[in-house]
Length: 240
Image 1 (cartoon, rainbow, N blue to C red):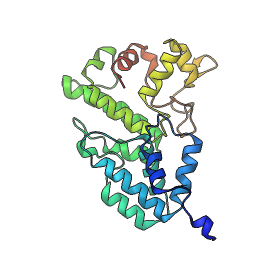
Image 2: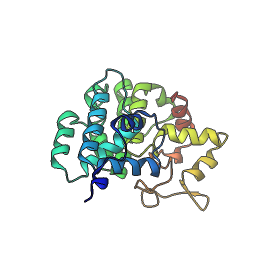
Image 3: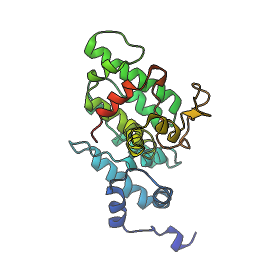
Image 4: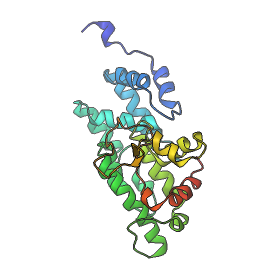
């Protein structure tokens, strides 16, 4: 391998600038740039040190790009760098010990490993569990009257977990943005996120897509057979 190939594609300062940008979605160009940096040992060290530094801050500074990087490093063959990452960030890009109310670690593990179908099921259980804690009533699904019991903090956490491990493609806030951009028309939202097939709501689970190749906003799911009121109230709680 030539010296040119061994050379980092950009300086440490440029790498840090790339990592500190507040991306709403990770494009193919950004992902390719990260891949080129991660090829190099020095590049991996710079990237890991930066996301570890962010995770130690008291306020939530986890960025969408952190989740992508975490996934990519876990998937590499570099055992030494994986060990360092897991030693410093054993829970994932988000420190689940900082999260209140319920345990989101199992959900984070599923999303890190791109097990989106199981993560979707667990997300619905988490939402029900949040309401159960507040109301002391067992829940199998949510009505619009239940949404008031879901704190913005919990909703933000669930949304962030989905976004950072999907390159910014999935999450309730992503769905809300698409809904607003289509004049809050529910049928338009279903079309854009491809929950419809020939004008009819897709059958669960076989007709939905459970990979990162799904359209933007496709996941997580919400039971529209019970109407749109619950999702409407959920969207109203999203202020970020």
